[in-house]
Every structure is written in structure tokens, then in C-alpha cells.
Length: 518
Figure 1 (cartoon, rainbow, N blue to C red):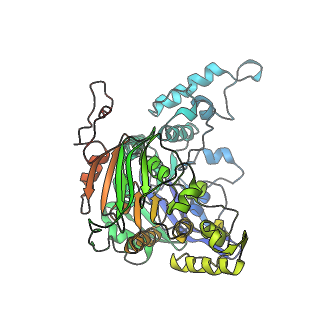
Figure 2 (cartoon, rainbow, N blue to C red; figure 1 turned 135 degrees about the vertical axis):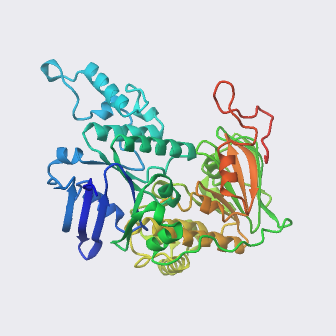
Figure 3 (cartoon, rainbow, N blue to C red; figure 1 turned 135 degrees about the horizontal axis):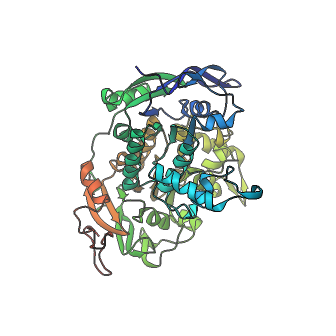
């Protein structure tokens, strides 16, 4: 067996009484893509901060190529060993690609001034060496997320690092972009680059990784070849118990059930001529790539944006656009796409966040009845199975899964007639995901109309039917029981008349045409 490129043994880290990691272990061989998985709070982030030299372990050792890890103060030595690329790129958007590649180490000429010619030349060499096909003089803000990630990887490789940590790298990518990322990863592996791949999407682990390490409850659980670990066994290792892949199928909403949401000809810059109905007790999914318009459509219905044409009615009444509070009063509850930026106020408590949508019910004349608010927050915490000390705990203390439950609690607190969920399980652990999806089932059973917008097939399997958007139009509808390959083909523009034009661009119907299912 070759010497591990990275090896961590018996790693422990504590923050006061809190044990963030104990008996952390990891052995990564040169040239492999090694997955690190576990539920939120399992210790993954703590282990990564230790592997990248951001903090020292209280116990245990870390070695690179058989040698002890450098001192924390020797940042140059760490940069030559390892780099981390996060789900949100850390490049400076206003700088060019070349400037980002050599930030704080620009080549200089006479008098110590930056040599811009050398900077551009050396940047082009770095990009060419690692087959990163972007213009070194392009402004980084103008790049796609996938290209920004590759610029970060190229920057790390230019320091000499050959061990790259990818932390949820696919979170902001659509299916085609993910496949391109995986293709680039495989090519870099052939060039001697090693990856630690962190993802909540277990299918990605099976697509791109050779080995997987599981952490649970701040401990190492197992390391195994991916090919020898079936998905149910991996889920059980992560959760500590077997979790059902899918609840038993149920009857769809009656076709004569009242229509709660009806849109006619709804149009904006992101979508066009959307005719959509969601009935009482029905769960409808919206699928599509990141450029399909599905998220913009959902956000319009939630009051975030004002369409340029068409109408939407909720129980026959016109739905207000461009006003979130008006949409809330009309009976719309929403779990937004980003819980950090749109869903939570980090400086507030769990109770404050969970009850924000129903303050008018918790007091009179502009005053909040504190006891009523606390009692209602306790009910929501229990109802959503939020693992917390109580409603007065800062929401910033929670793991990703529990924080998302708080966002879901607020959306449900107002007893909405229409519940809009945008990527409701993004970035949460397996058990929290199942808990959140069970709330979708409960809302459906209670007669709520539910609209689920997601890139996750598991989320969409909870739907009675799934509509696929492609370049802003509904092009297909899949009833419950669809196969993965059928839905993915629709998402990718296959077999519904949206081919590739002679010029190489996606062909969409002209104005006045409709794709199937529209």
C-alpha cells in the first residue's frame, strides 16, 4: 500500500464542554477522490478546519506524505499542502482571473512595481497547465460559478498543493455543470491531484468517488471503497439506523378537489406563459436546470417579484405580486432557497424566527404577548422535531438541518393555503431531510396545496406530479411513479422538441409555441 497523501489519527477538538470531534480518522491515498459524509453536526467541518491548518487539534496527529503537518503559523507551507474550495467561491469578484490567481504574490518588475504583463502571462500558463478554459483578463464576477470554482482550484495548484477539499461544490450547479465538474475532477486526478469531496448528495459520492469515510456524532464510523458499500448501508452508517428510502405511495388528490392556485399566462424575464394549477391536498413539483426559471416562478408566487404579464389566483382571489407581506396575508407560506440570506435572522432566537410570520396573532395593538409567543414557539419546536434547548436559544447555534426546520416552522405557522418550498432539503443531513419531507406529507394530508421546487429527486418523489421547465417554459409533466432517467431527460431538454439548433445553441419554441405539458 502506498504512503497516504493525508492521514489523520485520533483527532479530537473541544470548544468548552462541547465535543466537536473525537477519534477523528481519515486516510486519503494519492490520486483518489475520497468522500467525507455525515449528518450535520457529525464533525466534518471541524475535521476540515484541522486538515487545512485553520486550527490545531486538541489531540491526535495529521500527516502529509508521511510528514507531520506544518505549524499553524507557517501559512505558505499549508498552501503548498492543501486548499479548500467552498460551495460559495471565495475569489474577489471585482478582480480579474489573473489578479485572483496571484493575489498578494503578484510578479514585480523594476522598482518593485507589479508587472502586469508577467501577471497575465503567468496566469495564462497556470490556466493552460490545468486546462481551465477561462480568459485570464475576464472579470471574475462575470464567470459562471463552475468556472470560479476552477479558478480557485487552479490557484491552489499553483501554490503546489495537490490535495483539494471540495466542500459542497455542487450546491449551486445544475446537472450539466455538475457533470462538467466531475469530468474535470477525473482529469485532474489523472494528473496527480487528490480530492476530499464533501456532499449531502449521496448519488454524487457514487458517481465521482472511490472511497468514503463516514462520521457520526463527532466520531469516525467507517471507511470503505464506494463500490463495496451499498447506498442503504451508507445511509445506515450515517444515521445510526435504517431510514426508509420512500414512504408508501398514496392516492393523488381527487381531480375534483378545489383549485387553490391557478396561474394563466404568467410571464417574466425568466419564464413565459405559465399555466399552472395546484389543488387542495396536492403536491406539485417544479423541476429544471438553474436557468429554467423554476425558482423565479416560485419566488414570484411568494411575493418576491412582480411578473410582467399574466395572472395568479389563490382560491379565486388575485394573488398580490411584489409584496411578501401581502402574499403572506393572502395565505402563502414559503421556505426560501437560501436559509442564511433569506430564511433566518441570525442574531435572533429560535422562537423569534419561528413566530415572525404570525406576530399579529400573538398580541394586540402592536404589543406581543411574550408568554403566548413562547408557548407557540415551543409547539413549533415540538411539531417540527427541532433539536434545541428551547425557543430562547440563538438560531445561529443550530446545525443546518435544525435551522432549516425553523424556516419550515415559520412557513407553516400561519396555516397557509399554499405552501411554497424552494430546495427545502438543500445542505441538510439525511435524517433531517426525511423529517422535513414528512412535513410535506403532513401538509398534504391537512389539505394544503404544496408547490415543491427542487433539484433533489428525493424531494420530487413526494409530489403527485412534477412539471419540468426548460428555458422558461413548461415542457413536460410526469405523474407520480416516474423513473429517474425520464425526469432527468426532460430536465436536460431531451425528447420534447427542445433540441440543439444548427448554431449549437439550445432550440426553444418561438413566441406563441408551447412545449408539451404547457
